[in-house]
Image (cartoon, rainbow, N blue to C red; front, side):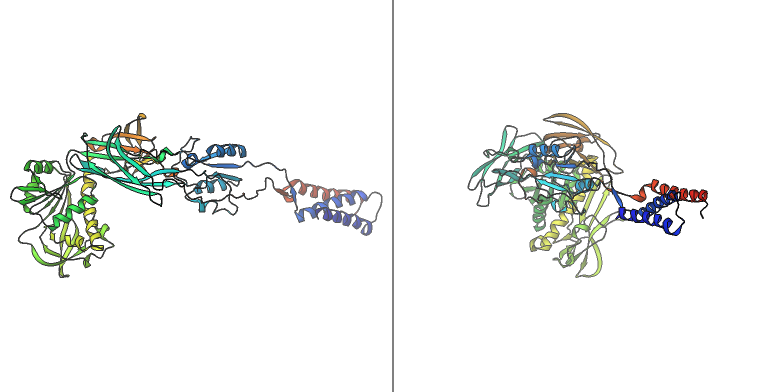
Length: 599
């Protein structure tokens, strides 16, 4: 079409001279100049695109570097060879910075794929397909990337997928560990699996599980704490007879803190239904060892739960060393005066308590209000008597009560933080009926105990260390996370590590949310924070185990990428010299016509 327009424009220019002008041998020059000018203008008006020089565009290769790529049956070597053959630029997604091996503890690749597609270049993603966000890959792009899926080959494996246990206890307590075992790839039906909990070569507990028809087994280990010194102990919960091609799923870690004395001590004088239900709730929600003592007769104490006799010396020692001291009754409150506990919870009962049906209500803006906000507290069983708390102007009030749902609301739970000691006082009898009734009221009772204990022990944790480790056991490829618990803005904090791989020193740098991450190789690591005192020390266990080792569902399928032109057409209007040619041709025609005496 462009050639036809140029021919027609040139022909029209020549014919205009042939029939509208006096044609001589000299008029062919201006006619040729007019033909050149008109044809150039015609082409510029059409503005056709002319093919440009084709240049190859390199492909960006994204290689899934999560741990699943090198699990048993994984095809990492094949994926790496394919990636280097398809592109000069290979990006390892999920791996730690500078690492060219699969070290990612999670398979979330959608953000990195979207960023690569935004550059406008062809993108090739090579993965095993076991992605957490596979449905989001290429969702924001019309074409999406080319995807090559190299699924792992099936293997039979027996994995220790979950471990739970008592993490804080005293030397006189029993330790309980629960482990779940799963067989994959058709392995393990009816098989007996031996499970051990050991510290180094010393076996603490041993048991066995039988895998059922669903290839799952559950084992519960329980026994006394062996004679070990107080402090942190890293237990390895391991399958001793798995004998499968993936040994990295056969062991998990459990960090246990053995305390010289219980962290939470409950004194009840006299014992009551309240002390029974409160002791059970404390054992369920507190992160410290709990010990209860009941004064069943004057100066006669028994341990809660077993009702074994306890000497006055044992009770006095527990009172002095407790982190949180909970007292029920006036006699117990008198004994608590000798304690050095930095957190105290007193339940008041007195002969002058006002009897009646006292229905509880929430007080806004208190540490316990959020835990009960979604519960209909005023419909729970009422308390049977109310004692006067005498709450001061600097105390927070968490719960109030009205007699028969009428009249003024009286505070029945108040707290204060004074001179580094946190105290909570409860002035109502009969809250145990919440737990006894079951259902939502039982949940409310546990939530009340958990939120109160959390606030009380929060002051203890903050005063003993500037930062606290959120989880003491993490999987391979996951960071250990510290949170800032001291007052004021977070500041960089030095931490020293000592573990099986060696010793190292890091600096924790906290973000705007007060969190700092540190990545360590698998092993048991003891740490000490700079200026942390006794509370600035602990243990972090980095497991060899990862959920990436366990086969999962493939969430993406292979597909070819969108076709991208490696070159593009150049419109004639982008060639500025054509405008000059048209102007020169028309100007030349005018100059020649003047010399020839034509108008």
